[in-house]
Length: 267
Length: 260
Image (cartoon, rainbow over all chains, first blue to last red; front, top):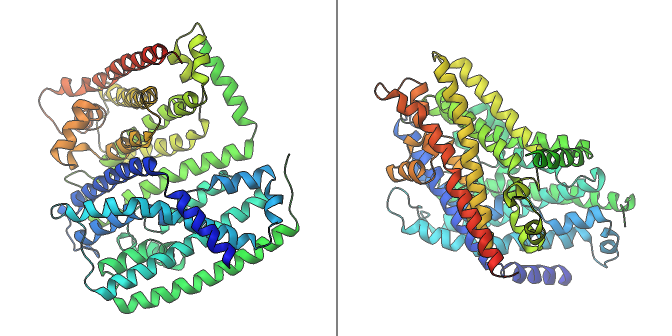
């Protein structure tokens, strides 16, 4: 366990070094947020029927998406791991005296955590200071806030466990980018990145609820805005725990199987 | 120009070596704008229209911008990854050669997998055109084609400007994405839906308005005076690349003079 914690710490500190890139990223994300908010605002001005999510909630949702993008974006790839797999140096990794699954899990989580920590505060602070209606709402109660934090971090781990499965699949397919681009396009869509899940048509929402992608983004953000009330939030957290357990288990088993029949590629 | 086509065919052959990867990547490149477009579709399903524009009108706008972007992206990739060239010192080799730096950087990389996005935008355009009740006169068709060409020139210009930044700094270049990817996302919708100052910026400074809003109004018969002016606005978009090339040459001179 100690090994995983130290990997986590190292990667966290490492990631926090990249300040210039983070600053540029914040500016880009801020622009993205404002743009999408303006688009939603334009749609909402003509709304004939009352939409299932208020404009204020959508605006907060967008800001949370941008602030915590590194937590929720499936398309962020770790090139170190990809290079290890495709170059064959993975053989050295397998010699470590700890589980590679745990090692990589800690690493990926720390990377996303440090990336998000660098970027979320500037975006959130500005989002709080914006004039109405562009500003982000405050959560209604301490309970809501705590539930938000819990579901956000659990969601991050669910996402990491999904991405672990994608890296493990690379052992078999040997194609770093090709298979991932499609999976990430689908995953991102069903996590509410393109449009919030409540704004999807009913039949599509059913599919979204069936999949785990929404648990990293859509669910925590709606807990924050109160769109998901605390009682349902607790149910959601339990769902997150169950999915996390299942995905980690599958990941472990898959990793072990792959280790056994590994094909070391190239020199 | 011949040189450029030679570069292109070499890179195409190289990229086609990894067949499966190529097609999978292209498929992925199809799905990304497809999912964005699906989002637009569902929002229209729920809201009906956006500030007076209907779904198929926005789809036309969407298709034109994405088509222009995908073509520009495919051909101008060399500028997109220009920072790598500067960092590794490869640009010095290019300076030594007796050919235009612009053509060489242009030919340094192609990304043929962008064909996925191109295919998606063609499908969107076809769908929009079928469903719009527009009287397609010859002039409107020419305007339409000019819109796409103009868009390609504008995006090329922005990519060149983005690369020119590399002559001054290599840090924080990600900000330029606001104008390339950000500009594309923004121009997918008719600019009139945004706040006035955005519309003005993207008409006069980076002339997306010449590709998106102004000629679109003409095609959809939304304006009834000075029609010929609206029709000619894409040409202004094409001219945008001239200052961009000037700035590029300024950047190259500066790079040379710092004696690297």
